[in-house]
Length: 271
Ligand SMILES: C[S@@+](CC[C@H](N)C(=O)[O-])C[C@H]1O[C@@H](n2cnc3c(N)ncnc32)[C@H](O)[C@@H]1O
Image (cartoon, rainbow, N blue to C red; front, side, top):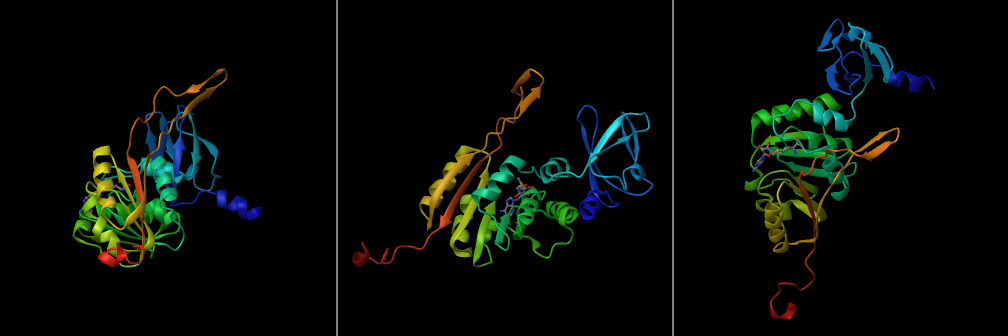
């Protein structure tokens, strides 16, 4: 009981989410003596440090703010970004479709702002990221460090995944870049049999090109899906879908590296 209560207390150095009466959300890192300015008043960090997550505090103008630790989904949408992040609904689907589990060795490319890295690490995987741009790699490292600290199971290399993958015996290859079909031959060499390739793509043309490359490879059991996520307005007698939703983000394609059947490709005897 006591231990559970202690985990609720907000500490200096933590990131928290302030939610105002209009449900606007503000992400801030708690620093003793600092203040946070919104257009509806100022909140002293010292009024947040030491209180329990889920508490309501008063700003300088008497407005109320709810304070909680951000969920990973809230963090991904609020954190500083360089490249466009993968939306939480798709991050969740990637964890299931690519069957990410603790202890797996995962190659991720490109890393961008690190949102997908954060989801993979949270699920317990060890991640090597390939990224072309140094500024994006720095941003991703900072975002990941703010979530999990300096994690020994996370490394980013500045390099082009289209030119090859050095790792061998990987469990998963997860891709969010424009031409994943160029990675298919490298993933064939880098994954262990049964390993999963998972690619996130914004258009169906790209998805179709990837599927053709997979067909001509040792990958099998291909699957493509998109996730439609519709929130609802629930208030008294007005219970209906919200008027607005994110209409489109991207398509997820997965496939598994197979062992060629014995005798396949051996010429006439194997045909
Ligand atoms: C859309 S962003 C990835 C966002 C990331 N999944 C996230 O959730 O934060 C695509 C990234 O791929 C990188 N990229 C593009 N081509 C690449 C390549 N051939 N090798 C490595 N990284 C590449 C880009 O620099 C960019 O940072």
